[in-house]
Length: 85
View (cartoon, rainbow, N blue to C red):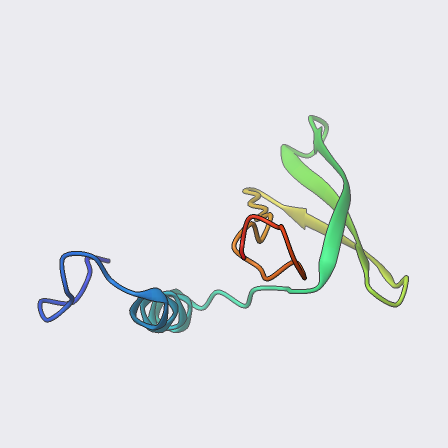
């Protein structure tokens, strides 16, 4: 999905967030936030990925999927001296 025609050459944070939200809505992507990937292993017996994540309250979830993606949130405000400051 290309950027909209009216996007500036260098989109700011809000333009990019709006784009990602529209992208997720268009393709039916329901991202999961505030959790960490503890393990990701390819299960050759079923030809799928098994991904175990742990939420901020310790809740564990295992996803079984054909594709996987993880993001580090590196532009997050870190409270002084972090990459996002």
